[in-house]
Length: 500
Ligand SMILES: [Mn+2]
Image (cartoon, rainbow, N blue to C red; front, side, top):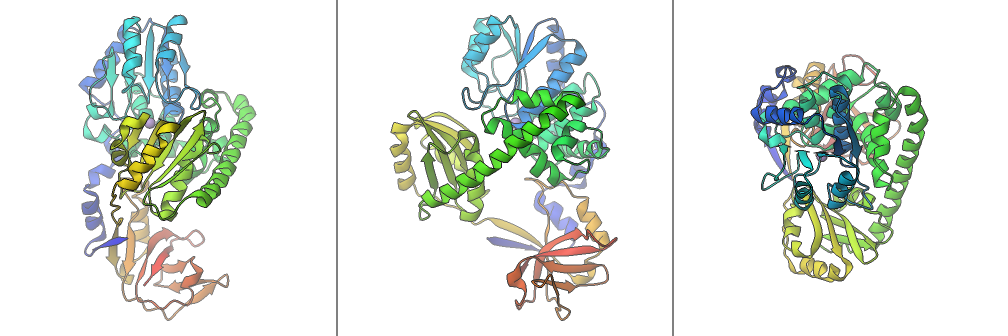
């Protein structure tokens, strides 16, 4: 780890590091109707053919599920004749394909409206065009050329504060041109959080507004998944969103969740238990596969790769994700089935795995993703070529860089803690500031629960470490995060990450 130290005003430095201004955090700028030519054009195109029969084609992850639910609600509001379809992760894989187009045609749909997919589905689009099925695409995945379709909208066609939206966020923004709908706003906010597309600009507005609505306690669909009507960003990220994602990961159809998100209270009560059960299975399997993978890997390799029949395709990404942090190396986990390998690669911010694997993309039958995450498929017979590529290519993994903000004991206060809390939610484009106090006088050590050292820093702030090896450590500097004290009003805790 390389550290970059920042002296001077904490917030000034923090904004500088992130290349942002207060405006990027100000959500009061949003809420009125957003005017944009491309978005308006997309709206007009929809209205022009509103008497058609629409098939909404979504994706099976949380963003895709929320997008589908939002557009479905919009179509109901507009009285548009529609149905929706989400391909099976295991049997069909991601995105619009020719079979779905044929199925749409056979069932008398004259328009396909894709959400969270479609921008790269050139072959399927061609089939649809030949069959006179109009295609409307609402997607946020990267593209080189605009798809040849009836209508297309993408966050990058919008102004900067809207340009990092996920598909669910964009679906919500689009729906505001027609109606105001709190449930759609909540699903838009959850989608943005789930896809980790950033927490600034309109993304921030959606996440914070969703949180505000959720904390009123009336969105029973999410209350039931959260098992509480009290919310934090963590409860959404670590409790609710994984459950929504678990269904397709475990090879069930994500339609179940779309239906759930739009069902009445009684029906939700009936089906929430099965979603919870699937999620518990998902957790157990992930844990088991992580342990298995650790036994099978060669730790001396620069890039860790494992394949096997037991690695469920929907779980590969989760397993890889768990391993990159402890190994600090890129990890690829592949499911092997009937001569075909399918799975996921993950890496930390300091290595671009997508670019790296692009160097041998000719062996992949499907390949997509971004710097830190990608999905690949290849024939088993090409596996040796992949290994050869990995063994013969030098890779350079940069040390991760961490920004540290120097402060002194007197500046630490409950007030500062409140100001820092206002920066939440944190995300890929806004990390929680890591603080450092130099030359701490540590004469007042207490021991909590027999193993954790605690220090009184001033009237409002005490510091605690939950690392038992810090108990007798000699140090001069403390590094950590300032958080509200859960037990004492108007007090803050400095949670120690490291003593030096
Ligand atoms: Mn997405």
